[in-house]
Length: 349
Image 1 (spheres, one colour):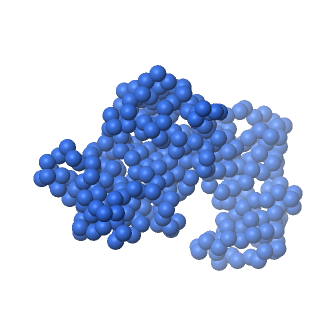
Image 2: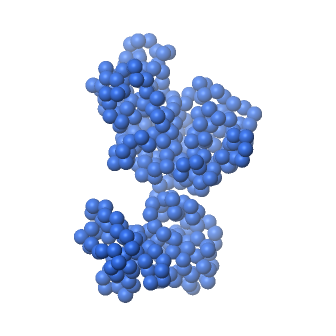
């Protein structure tokens, strides 16, 4: 089922919390709203579910108007399922009975059949008789997902679905959940503050800041073609390095003359002589002992196969470099580097 959000504004009687959001998600796709706490993403999710009214604009599900300033379809009539942040599993019901909770309209035989196929789908076919407290956090998450999917909703909403789990299993579970949703051919929309969850699960991602949708795009474009400074800073790692645009489009910086192809990511036209900020990712800075450009190691973050170095250029500006971990340097050491910026992302100063 297609989801359409058109110029939606939401407030609680004061200033708008959600400010003119436009997005569209195709049927069978997985979308995500990504942003820091308090940016308005859960408020929009609740409005899609029918738990909050909109002050302006409209929300359509499958082409049908469900919310506007003068029209409101109640949640139970929207054919929307929801997985809440706290899961809200019933502790006194077995796993099978939790999944079957929303299947009151089916006879006993079809209820058992639907529960059995969902237990197989989530990889817990032997766990039906168990109770939620007997499961791990990741298993409980899958049960909550199966319960929401059981009535075959046309749209599934997920509110910070993995926030209670350990960081090392979030991305793995996000991939698993994405696979399950694709297998069921469900349209899904989640909100999270964790970009790795979003990248692992979503087809399209919107970055939200202060109630404004900064960019609705693929993960690749958010990383390589950010439209705003906020997206450039929020997605991935890197720094915005000051520079001056030279003739031909090259940019003079403290890292040297950068000649990468302009990605066209920024929305403003930039001319020769302009002062700009250049997005420099850690993979754009290459460790090179023979390079005349030297930088001081300010910090090192060991990441197994690689070390993320935070470096200070002679200009005083910081950059980051992702270096194989067998090249180990101490804080305060000077190391050689050179730039290899394939796609330049420029923002006017």
